Image 1 (cartoon, helix red, strand yellow):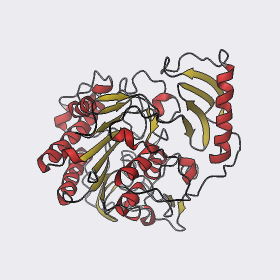
Image 2: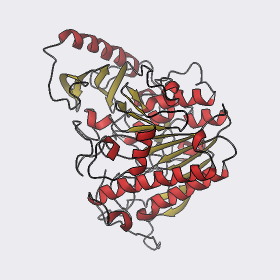
Image 3: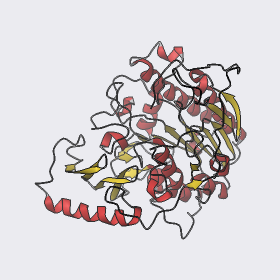
Image 4: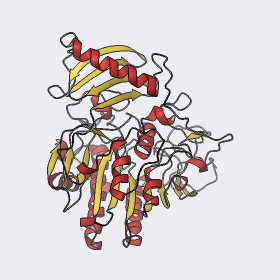
Length: 451
């Protein structure tokens, strides 16, 4: 079998309940529903962090964020513009591995793993990049002072526009994705499409706003779905549909202030309750994946080893990673056992562990907090069973202690022995500077929403 093309679609703050196939009654998502009906819907899929920079670093490297120095960024939970930290040049990303296997690699959309040249996608295995280096709320917005920098749109390592019109940006992203697919149709390609939607501020085209049943948030979700439809149509037109694996997921849960975006799950973005990290994941590969659901535990950590296996390349030896090879699942085998255990970190603090159906919380917001839930019978985490099942809790406490020794835990003051530092540059510079005489398309965005 020839190596499959791979398209990985990663949304920004899309919640567990935001797709119609995942229970939404507000959002029309026919193309995502098509993937779910003709592929695999993963019911217990986790982002490695409840916020974006750590989650994206984990996806790219197959490592829990603290392992690669991505738990915290000089007191911030995500990277900020002009910061001297980023994904270390010593890390070997999934794009680098696939490039070694003969893939053409392209990325379109949000990066957020460091905006200094040493940290950009072009230095981490991507042949082509077009997008925003960080979140879409990190440009100049209403009420900002003179120190706020204009939002940069990059092509490879060059700023090609400042303060781009966000109502048109997803359409521009789609155009770049289609061009990349057409240019590389004759060889295997890896396309990482990282949406800006539905992260705030919510700028959606009027065509989607006028039909939305959930305001600007719903319009942004439905534009994501439209973009997916464009990819599917182009794959069919190019005759590539049966040799292309599509993975559709999100970097963390929704902020949950725009309707029931996290479904029945407790919590939201920025928390280690299920609503912060359990997110949609759809796997679609006609002729290889039969329709079905997968209830095993899996994570965006696992893309690394799984995609490497599909491409016929091995992760680098002698480097500790946390990724499991679930390539059999990507080939449609829903009987694979998946993960036995998953750890939940907020920044560098270990807050919970799941093993099979059991989840034990040990901290919240930097302070001890203990509760035990059975996620099979109680995914909403409503009934604490800690006193009823002390033996279950004891086993989970032991797993937490093993994890602390490996990855560290800022809450207990434990230093991990299996961690590596993030990348650092000595004299960081922002990519843009505010110029009051510059004819920005939108000189100061009219929303003051920050995510």
